Image 1 (cartoon, rainbow, N blue to C red):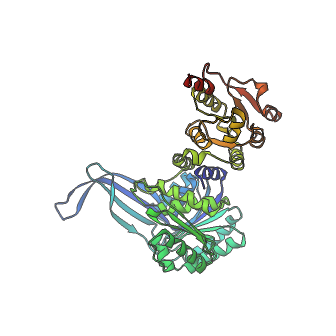
Image 2: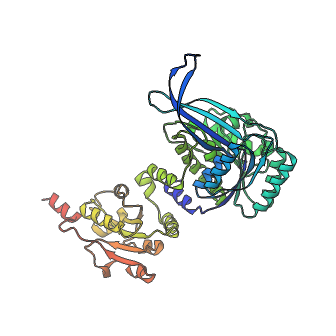
Length: 491
């Protein structure tokens, strides 16, 4: 799937309602310089200068979903302490529904203190982590209270994400009840599993997202290569009656498979990795966002792969926004591969853009020996809207129109040159003598031709005007044309 198709899929995701159930944690960071050894003992001395608190575990999943544009409901357990109060406050500040966050006076809120040291003013690295937590399961009374609350919220949910760190929230009884309730109401359940847990506990969920070591332990398969991960993912699906499994493979990207053994491998782009903290939470959130909007598993995996790549480039648990995903996808595009489409694809993409309030502009031509006149008019055409589609005459079409000695440049290379222009968004090669079929299918908001055309001469004018579209010409760069250039070269 091309990156522009992923952008279109991302644009189709609205604002789904997603319930996140799991283990909520507070991540505290102490930053400072770590440039010398203590005189008291052979340990690094951290000269602290900054402290901050961030959401961890299920809280980070909620935060990721909120920044990705979902409506989020949080369900879990907090202690009656400062850490619990901080988690609730941070979630409420980003619009998360915290009604199902239950307090337990007998347990501390899971808190992780990370000490981050810089040396020679370079990138900071974690030098120590201190955890405060209990792994005891919820009391029957608190579990019943949470289940009742979940039942009351389910009707409005598009997906349920289970963020399991085995801290006591997702007990076997809780898991079974939640999965059964979701299946009864046909709500997809996506799980980030806890390390070392029996995957039988997740039986009947829709999708699971283990990392490499978790998948190896669950399947018994050593994952040396991505192909091994496809086999492991398929085995996990069969063992726990899951529809799909996506295994995150750090530097090797991701692997997806279903129970039938059908699978795909999604490589990751080379990048500088500073911190993998929270990357699994970003994957769960992105996959959940896609599945809640009924996107295919392959799309979910590809978008999650991109999101995780952005996350690991940042220090600490990162948050990703949809615009960041779009920008990264656009940056990865290769001009010909990701701007050249057939008519069916172009119509689909145009419809998505139009649904999102974007104005579609269409122009066409042979564009043999691209010159300053072409460049000027294409830039002017793009100014009339948000998405510029260029119809390009095929080699056969150019020969019929210009003679057997044309085109001088083949259609693939002409398309590549057009695609390299930032103002051009899509290129469609057509074999007919005129673009009438393209215009009728794409239904552009604006039809544009160069200044050497009169509006009444423009092919497709009647179609565009029939539904209220605009038909315009651009200014003309005098004395420049392909014919004139060729005549000058031959004299």
